[in-house]
Image (cartoon, rainbow, N blue to C red):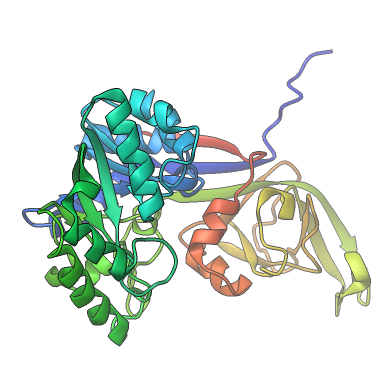
Length: 367
């Protein structure tokens, strides 16, 4: 017998040209500053190595990951002069790995600062570090009293080179929220107590709050991957992914036929149904009851999303899909943000949940 048992059932196409285009749009907004790239969580599910390699070729030189393991993977693919910041710092036992790979931990506590300072003393090297300041999110970062302690005792930074001082905005996607300006002012006050160093405050949405938030390094993540950073207006970013699934069975049913688990849905008339090879095991939210498209024609979901399959009502399709055809789920007619809205979540979660069973292909950036 011949054939390939690894037939593609669902296909995720990642447009690296669109990712690079989005980065360039944001970089143009940075003015004299720099535009980095947040590539944690496998570049929001798109593939960290592929994304960072494309961005580096386009001129990006500063990257942010969450965990040291993510940074180690990237370092093997990046130039040595590209910087990689580890947002969750250097957990005990990982310090030598960060030093060997030239990864820069983002310090969030005085305890972590002391541990990294001890590494500098033990190795006899001046080690790069970034300081995150908590300016009002109460998630990660040095508290104001910690910053004041560092300001009063510069020996707390002995052996360390502060490469970046940063904070994170809690409400940047709400353009008029007063917390944005409150955090900006607090960040300016606190960083003024520290040795002079490049500063970073703006995430994706923060980039669109105005030049006062830009400072030295922009830190976009979601916007690079096509998620709308300006939910108060139209999306300025290019879409970066297309998700398609194979149609594996069609059937005709009589009116009144129940469909799927729990018989939660019933066809109201004689209908044509199709089952596609995609489900919540692939990362599609179980509560995202939306539509699929075949050559631009919408086909509503019918019944519940299963682990490996979804049923579509194809009755109204003038151009009827056949078994073996692919249908579109993330496409120009239905974006990641649209699916997030249907699921009651955010685009970040949709992208990062996309499963390993999806066959991934990449569109190379234009030269």
